[in-house]
Image 1 (tube, protein in one colour):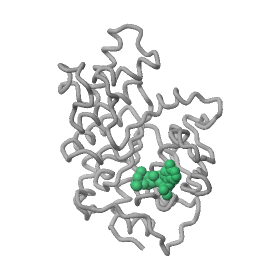
Image 2 (cartoon, rainbow, N blue to C red; image 1 turned 120 degrees about the vertical axis):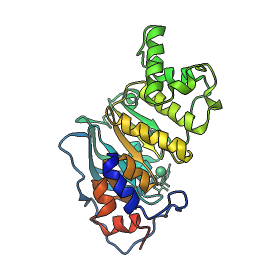
Image 3 (tube, rainbow, N blue to C red; image 1 turned 60 degrees about the horizontal axis):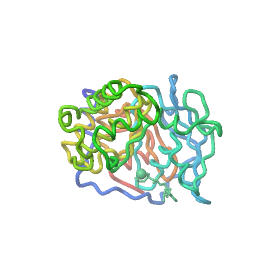
Image 4 (cartoon, helix red, strand yellow; image 1 turned 30 degrees about the horizontal axis):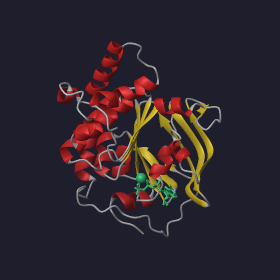
Amino acid sequence: MNTMNSSITSEASPQDEATVPVPESKPTDTVIEEGKTVGKPYSDDAKFKLRDVEVFYGESRAIKKISLDIARNEVIAFIGPSGCGKSTFLRCLNRMNDSIDICRVKGSLQLDDQDIYDSKRDVVELRARVGMVFQKPNPFPKSIYDNVAYGPRIHGLANRKSDLDEIVENSLRKAGLWEEVKDRLDATATGMSGGQQQRLCIARAIAVSPEVVLMDEPCSALDPIATAKVEELIAELSESYTIVIVTHSMQQAARVSHRTAYFHLGHLVEVNETNKVFTSPEHELTESYITGRFG
Ligand SMILES: Nc1ncnc2c1ncn2[C@@H]1O[C@H](COP(=O)(O)OP(=O)(O)OP(=O)(O)O)[C@@H](O)[C@H]1O
Ligand SMILES: [Mg+2]
């Protein structure tokens, strides 16, 4: 993946990610046909099958008939201007939108061919299978150990203390944090650096052995070194998990993802191999976005 993407990063990322302001969604003259996504939105090995998904906040429609497959063990990046619906769509995948009163989701959303929005579905179990890492690291005000042990405890994944210790150690190892914290597992998590806190949140998410990890701008509060660590981690995790990452950094999308999905004003405009999106996008709106032009 790294070799494939190295050319992308040098040739097709004209902007310095540290200085690029996030473009706002603007009205555009380009007509977007509802539900018509160009590129390759479907997969033969779909983990998620999402069809004609619409999301409303009250009367306002934030997601407009999006259809997409997310393949098993792929890393897919969601990119697009601020307010285009990336987080809203991401939150449908583990029903995080349920907590927003005015939010309604329509369409067909399946995980392993089972309806995510089935009224009989156990949402706690769903969120254990589809974990989430947020923009700002949000460790619980507990010890490092207890943060990682939290999920396994509520899901009854360990009967003995030694089993729990093993899960905690393995999760911290996978998150690349074990060596840094193994001698202070009882220390409060909120005393760690931002980058460590974010890797702790990733360890907490993977401690319950999820199948999918959703990440909403996981590096936006991190410095470049911590960002590089999280990106390395994403590459390693992709061997075992399906990962959906929202990012404002096109370089990050290029570095970590296999496919990239470009959102615009609630539409899914284009989905293609990341390489293709950044070197020869099919849709003019995608091209405008990746080259920093709009209108
Ligand atoms: N809780 C909410 N209540 C009402 N409207 C909302 C809510 N959350 C999002 N929206 C609206 O839905 C649209 C999509 O927002 P969303 O946060 O999904 O965009 P985004 O692409 O993630 O943006 P950003 O890049 O800034 O995070 C926006 O118009 C936003 O104002
Ligand atoms: Mg967002």
